[in-house]
Image 1 (cartoon, rainbow, N blue to C red):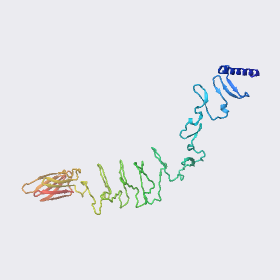
Image 2 (cartoon, rainbow, N blue to C red):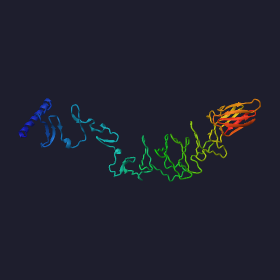
Image 3 (cartoon, rainbow, N blue to C red):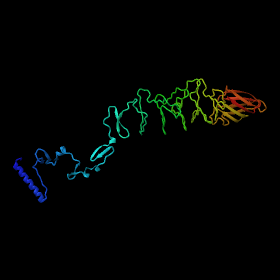
Length: 400
């Protein structure tokens, strides 16, 4: 197959075929024998330039080790025809997405998205406003740059730290604030519509304040429109105060404007203000120039205690004219006959008459005051007071 005569014969045949192509305008057909292919080599016969095997596979070694060119080659998916790509490889045929740059047909990472590759150990990439640069990573000590301010939008905590030793998680110190300009604070909480400072604890105090000054408060609250301090509890005191001082109180309230109150207690159905003491005064009131106590409603005292009026009644013979009974509900305490039944035994001859007053509580042993014409004396037994007159007339009676 490599003899000179054969090569000359093959060349002549090829030229003849070429001549036939020009003459008849027909394709040059090369049909190798079964199992062989078509090969084009260089002038030395040592390098394969093109090979087409019987299966139609094309091998072009120049694509591997040839000189690189600037334009890509594409093929038609229907016919397999080779040719320049649409747009001739111009960058107008491509578009660079976010973070990418395009130069001709070559993509690269945009400079503002390129992270530095020369950072040392313990350094991180940080944006300085123009590019990414290497900077030392915070180590939890003095490397945390101050002042620090940040903004984020997250459903979790924007800033969270944990101390697993059981000691303080966050501590703020203000050693220079004089209080002359605003409210210098070690820790400041500010919220437009939510809680400014929230403290929760499973077993300890949710929020605790301590001060070493006699002129300052452990916990202080200030408000222009709402409560300065508000407390709420499902199973305990809403606000609880305690003092170990001999001359101070657990909870104190002060007001210096108009008729405002220093301490106000409100309740839907329970006690608005309650005072309890083991050995001292449960509730104490003092005023230098006004009333120590003012009540806008009936007053009540337990029957086992004395000092306050338990009941009072004005009677004309057996007719209750006016009355008060502290042992009834407040809305019934002054409604005639106030739970007091009056009856009598009269002589009708100018002799001794008896008036009987039956109360809804025991009066035996209580202090009783009677004012009336011809009053002779009284006796108590159970819920009844018996009055003697000579003869009976109108009278006033008070039970303490």
